[in-house]
Amino acid sequence: CVGACPIGLLPLEMAARIRAGDLAASVDLGLKDCIGCGTCSFVCPSKIPLVQYFNHAKGELAARDRNKLKQDAIRELVEANHPDRNVRVLVVHDAAIALEAAFEGKSGIIVIAGTGSVGFGRTVDGNVERVGGWGYILGDEGSGNAIGVRGLRAVCAAFDGGPATALSEMVAEKFGFESLDNVIHAVYRDQWPVQDMAPVVLQAARAGDAESVRILEEQADRLSEQVSWLAN
Image 1 (cartoon, rainbow, N blue to C red):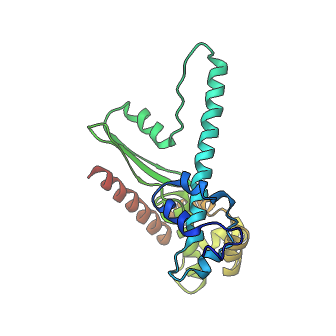
Image 2: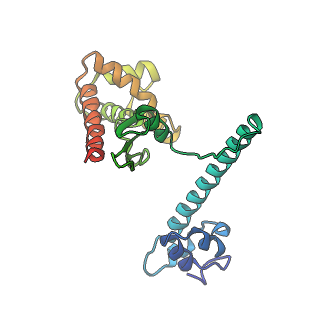
Image 3: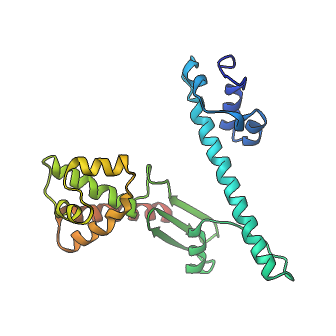
């Protein structure tokens, strides 16, 4: 794969550093110069997904850079308004702030379910644990995104001959989704925000739609399950 890299990088060496968690070393080896062409992955006899390693590492580096920019911006703002104070600024997950506000440093569990979802808990020993928050592809149970996706699945199933649901008529009226193709094109071609479907599922459930009620009960169970992981 060394000979295959068009800019002469060392793909296997970089991947080894990334797997070891040493992103700084991978940067020294030229990670940021990688153009992501995928040639190294294509010719690798062991079928190692090298370019996926590199893309993941670049995403991690970008996230770190964004957090540092946020910290610097907040620090500058605080220092400008309170020049006489020595302020230490930390950028943390918003759920950590909610946990502190809810229990004032004592033991407890919170669950946040908005567009995404996550659970945070503090043990009696003061350790902070987290569950969920895996993102919209892998998790976010009980969130607006998860409820919206399952609502649209119910609509698609109804178009294909599955259980009837009031959601079909509601999305046609509210979003103009009058066919299966309308739904598929909106989601995959137009990147329609599926979380916008969640309020429709809630409205249908309040009106007694069986599929919508099932979706909400299922997602509530998933959140409860995660809370049990924290509690145990």
